[in-house]
Length: 122
Image 1 (spheres, rainbow, N blue to C red):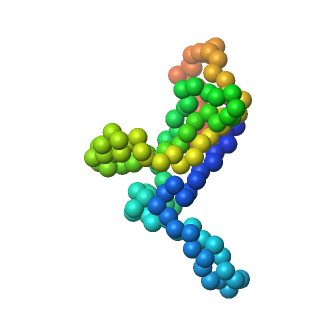
Image 2 (image 1 turned 60 degrees about the vertical axis):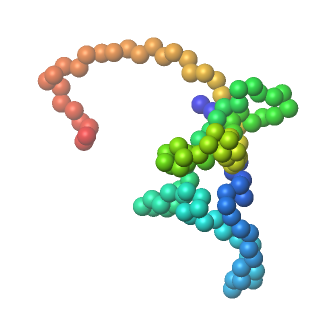
Image 3 (image 1 turned 90 degrees about the horizontal axis):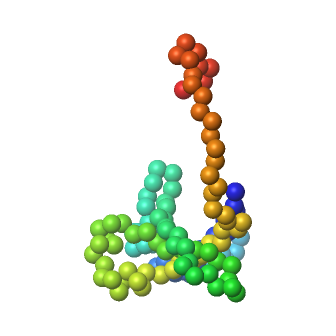
């Protein structure tokens, strides 16, 4: 098992930083337009689809293992030129701590008699 650290720079999205008045004083806010950033409205929230790309060559002075870019809707991505695709901003990076390739697992398969009853509710 490995742990993953993720760092996202929300300022790479179309956004604005504004100071807003509050009952507790002024609060600095990050305003992110939903439609302009191709965010997805779901039943329980507003989401951003992202993909992580593993670095082909790891540099000795860096811990990061992947970079993160936004995964755009197919119709928008297909309409982009190669240059536009390359220029999509890097939203952040991640580090997979303790990553190791999965080892093969020996699984013993046993036959189940048809007359056995199942205690599980599903």
